[in-house]
Image 1 (cartoon, rainbow, N blue to C red):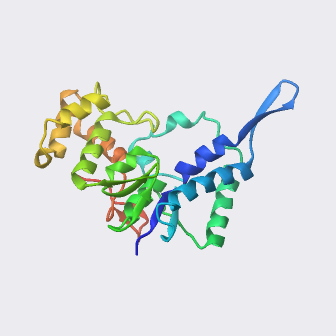
Image 2 (image 1 turned 60 degrees about the vertical axis):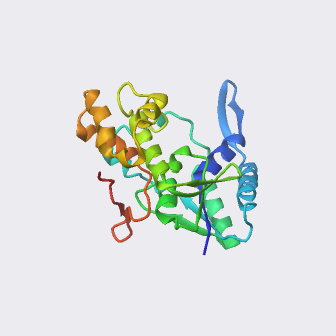
Image 3 (image 1 turned 120 degrees about the vertical axis):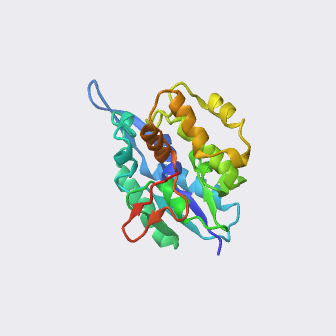
Length: 244
């Protein structure tokens, strides 16, 4: 049966940010608060938009685990976020969403050692829909719901997006990719290859030309890889790392 898999944090974090406010705790001492009831209302509005695609489909809310396997691949992964202001009361907000989901009969999934988008990628069957605002999820073949539109991503285009991400890196996740290659250059380089020629060897060549070792290139690719079906071991609760 088809279902809609939802990258929960991708919608909940912006909802919480929209509900933040500042207040003067004491003279000259300002703090940030969050009105959780407002955040929940914003989040539910987004869920309603997603469900409007097909209200008959069951939904599954996917959450990130406490720690991602990518920290073991690239120690600087997301290190740039340490100084960011956290959503006030974030654990309590997540708990409230989970309680709401259970009371509403929705499935709630957290896979250990991976992030919410990985959970979508692992769980998505051919008839399922993945709802996310994160462009990284387009590295996974399948049916994507993005801003009210259905995007069907074939394997060839998903692989191209994945290789592009490995080359470009991700500033927000703090892994650098290939030296001297931005998104436009990466797309131009990969456009030279026909689908059957677009292999890891072509991507690795870019890293080697930049003076970066194969081990480094593989680490970047594994950071960029959103897990796909079959790339997670449910018994050991660990990802099966991408290997060319």
